[in-house]
Image (cartoon, rainbow over all chains, first blue to last red; front, side, top):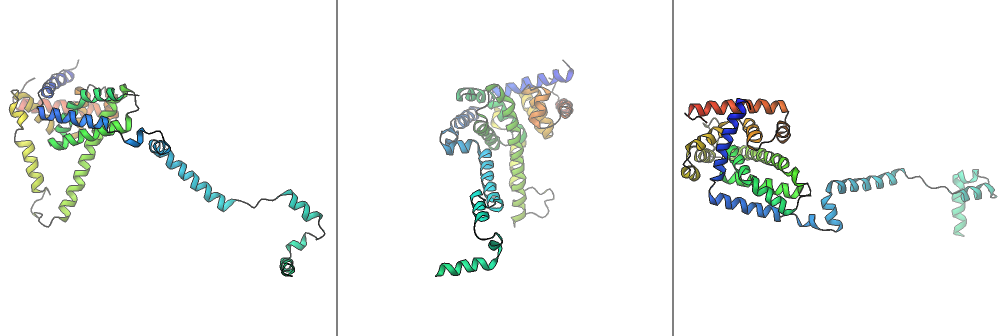
Length: 116
Length: 187
């Protein structure tokens, strides 16, 4: 044991004496706040429901919410219209040439025909 | 996972030393109790699922952080009080309010009832010498020697390197020995 260790041991032994001689009101107050702390677990953290689980894992819940929002944003901005093979076959085997569908006036003509 | 009984037993074992640690640093009885209460609440709320053997270093880390938080809040509160107070004394160069000076004088210069009741004058002198140490030196000394944490655990609790812990402990021991010698006390 070094001289520093020996000095520290004697000093902390004296401090232990001070702990034992602590006044009764402080001792009672400490016991009181300890009991409050031990019994004061947050009610939500003791439950078994979805909200209690979200509360226990608040960081993961926040990540999940962010992932959902980001997925929605990506879907809205990047989702491509779906093409079906049946539509392609109808277009290629129909009487109309495919160029007709690219003609802007063709859709106007179709609309005018539906009016009658 | 520690049971409520294990947490209660652990806290009952360390609560007096924790209070004394806070008191040596903060030098205010009520604030020290508040700090210990907050540290206990944080331990129970956040770490009740930890094994019982992990509680001592966790509690020490929480206690030190709570003490630091207390000083941060006090600094911010004092800043705003000085800023908005129309009765601020312009000649008060150190910027302390009369209330804080009075509280400081009461806590440091007047013996508390427990000290008056204590027959051991050495203890009061030791506690006074500890209170006069710089914050980090006092933390390192108490954690290393009073709480009997090893150097690595002390470094983890203080959030610093092991070399810093050794330096703080060495300086604290030397400073305490010198202060006690000045007061005519030999251990």
